[in-house]
Every structure is written in C-alpha cells, then in structure tokens.
Image (tube, rainbow, N blue to C red; front, side, top):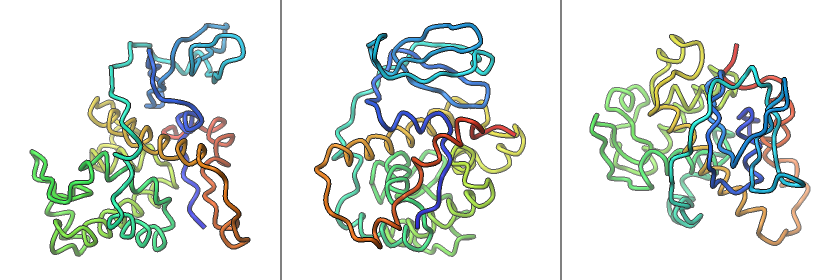
Length: 248
C-alpha cells in the first residue's frame, strides 16, 4: 500500500487541467493556480476553469490568501515527456515498492529535477536523475550518481526520510529536498524562496498531469490485491483541506 501523502489544497488540481491566469499565494506557502477568483466575504472562490456558473472551483478562507499575481506562461508539456522511459520506469517501480511512495510522485520529482536526464549536472554540482549533491550521495551510500538505478534508489531513500520527518507532508518534504531541511526548520514550513516554491509547483503539476492522463484511460478490471494497494492520496484531500499542509 502506498503511503498517503498530503498535498493540501493543491491536490484538488489533480482533477483539472493546469493552465491558469492567476496564482493565489497562500500564507501556508502554497501557490494555487486558477483562472479567476471571486471574493465572497470570509471565503474567496478560486475558479479552476473559465466557467463561473457550473465550473470547477475551490473555496479558500480569505484570511489565508496573502496575495494574487498573474500566472507565468508555461508550455503545456505532453504527458509523454513527463512519463519516464521504459527502463527508468522499472527502476521507479522497484524504488516505489521498497519505499511505498507513489511511482508517479517519484517520476514527477525526477522530471522536475533533471528532465529524465541521467547525466544532468546542475550549476551547484548536483548530479544525475534526482540531482544528488556529492555529500548527500555519499551519506546515502551512492557511489555513482550517474548510474540511474543507484541515483534513483538513493534519491528515493532521501525523499522517504524527508516524508517520515514531516509526517508525509509532501510540500515540506519537497521544500527540504530542494532547499534543505535546515531552511524548512528555519521558516517553520515552506521557505519563501521563489525557486523552492516554483519547484514544488512543478512537481505537483507534473504529478497532476500524470494522474489526469490515467483518468482519461479506459478502466481495466483490477484484482482484489491491486485494489487494496491503490494509492490513497486522493482520499486525503478532505483531510488536507481541513489541515492544510505546510502549517503548524
């Protein structure tokens, strides 16, 4: 059974297309993409499509919204680009079975980190598919960061440690993966760095596209065992709305 990650309000976007005209900057560190908004006193309604009557929307407490800003233009990447190549998919599935982290979540992190390029090197020296810094790789027992299996297994172990540390709060775990746990502790949640917040949004955007593509596929009969192993992320949406991730 996959672990139930908490995405807070952003998990609701899994059921929508992700083009947007506005960003709502929430006080808990989230940036919610939407088309337009309507103030209703203590509640602000964020419309996820261009329809006002009968369209999709989420209601957010007005006091939880820090500001609005225009959404940056972003190419709508084909899902095929986000999906991992066949050989990498097998590595991801193996890492997922050991860690109980949703393979689509792992694939989304990899795509945001390296664009599925096992030879990627960042300006800061992070290496491989999951962009491990040399010291981090050493601590994880990774001897060759350019080996896809070794890099992914090490990166997923680190991601698992962070999810354990933050009680499956995906936003904080991703922030720590990007900016370091010390920054998350310093700011008591997602730090206010544009790079980190953009990184979290990219991972969740990738994840949502993969899940949306799966919903559009014809349903197939599944075994009882597969049903019992079904990912429970969507079941956490209600709870996450009541207790948004990234807050104390």
